[in-house]
Length: 90
Image 1 (cartoon, rainbow, N blue to C red):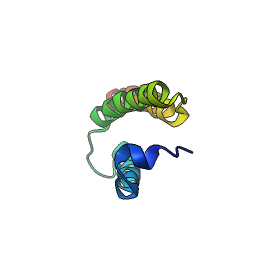
Image 2 (tube, helix red, strand yellow; image 1 turned 30 degrees about the horizontal axis):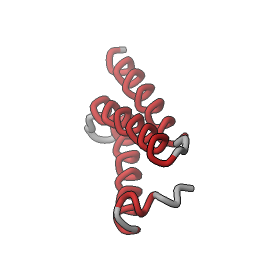
Image 3 (cartoon, rainbow, N blue to C red; image 1 turned 135 degrees about the horizontal axis):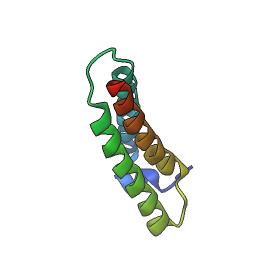
Image 4 (cartoon, helix red, strand yellow; image 1 turned 45 degrees about the horizontal axis):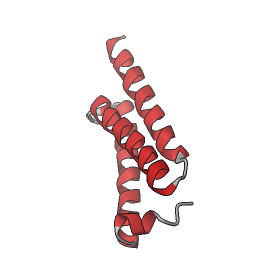
């Protein structure tokens, strides 16, 4: 999908390490939302919003490609943060 991805991160190993980190973060968010363990869901969700917007902007400016996954990450981060805070209150 993104043939420039490994070169952007400095090789195949860092590229895959970022992928593994994203999967681990998603699983940690899932565990936190389901209250299986304590995890700073709102804080991490806000960080992911910033990362998603940044990745979408970099992808568009540097490579001229729309990065739908980055935009989806930002939208999901906003929804997770807002809904999780409402669930904690109610």
